Image 1 (cartoon, rainbow, N blue to C red):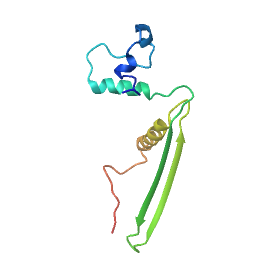
Image 2: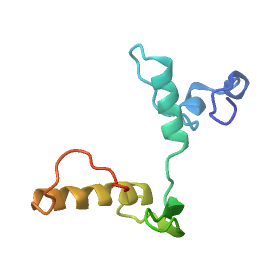
Image 3: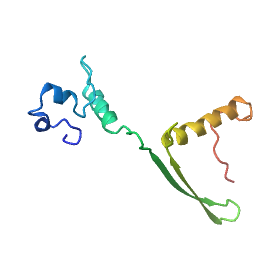
Length: 121
């Protein structure tokens, strides 16, 4: 609660002017569910300040077994992406692949319909 700035002792002794300039977001005047108030506080506390950016780091290892020979192959991939002033790394790494996939489907380059799994033997 102290980190969020909502510990009652942290607010004691502040004048109305000081408390309005504290690091608290504007709280809705209408009745609001506690989870929504908490989300408002977190969004305010975790916002990026000027000059800050996010980072996405992914590492994957896939083990594939040949259905014919039983031989295993290990494939690895890694990704490091940094946010830019135009878009966060999270927005780019989530949004761009989906946008590209949608474009491929809309361009008629995907003929299969439904959910497809791998076929093994």
